Each structure stands twice: as structure tokens, then as C-alpha cells.
Image 1 (tube, rainbow, N blue to C red):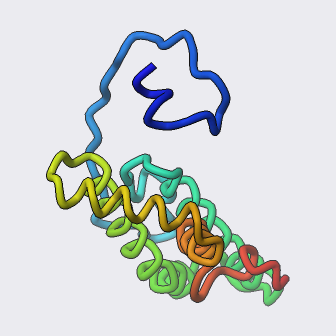
Image 2: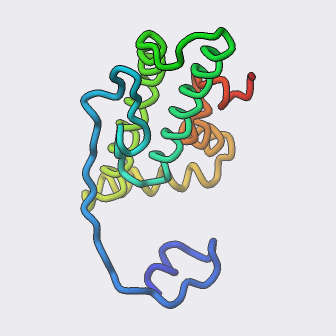
Length: 158
């Protein structure tokens, strides 16, 4: 009943709550994402806070970039495991990876916090996002990674 009153009726009537469980969340970033003929992707490369599926979105963008580079190498009959290709992959993905890691950490700090000023900031931001479609659209673009420079498969430029 308390959840229903706080969340509202967006998903209809909430019923049959299960047992409460907790799982420790730990940020993980691989020291190396590439080696000779090897790329570490997804949660093996970076585990982020699971808020808003950012880890999945990030992984899909990483895969899209790597697939595009491998496809280009294959078309030019180049070695898809070449270190220069793998280094280009990593260099092209680092800014997005760092931005996503920082965003999920900041989002978790805002939502899993009992400090009154953070609660006010969070609630105000949620309300503004809900009533301002352009703000919501911009937030969704950033959260899905459809912002800034993205892999060709994400942009559908192939």
C-alpha cells in the first residue's frame, strides 16, 4: 500500500509482494579490456549499478562498435584481431564507458540516499522530467547512449 501510494498507478495495481532480498552491488572495471586477439566486453569489462539498465545499454554500444570495426577489417581483408584495431575500439569506447559509469554512480547516490537536500533534488528532478517532454527526451537520449559520437550500428549508418 505504501509503495502504491508513493509510485502511483502507472503500472496498475501492485499486489502480491514477495520476500524482501538484497544483493550487494559492487562497481567493477577491468584493468585491461584488450589484449592480443582478445576483447573483454559487458559485465566482464565493467559492472555498473543496475539502475535503468545502463550496463546493458553500454554493452550493446560496445558490441556495436567492435562489430563495426571487425566488419570494416573483413571488408578490407585485414586481421580482425590486430592490436591496432582493438586499440582503436578501446579508444573509441572509453569516453562513453566513463560517462556511463559516472552517471550510474551519481544516480545511485541520488536515489539511495536519505539526506533531505538530495531527496528534494531527486523529487524535483523527477517531477520536472515527468512534466517536461523535451527534458525527458534529452534524458532518455543520454541514458540510451543516443547522444554524442556513437558506433555506426547504433546510428544505423551501415
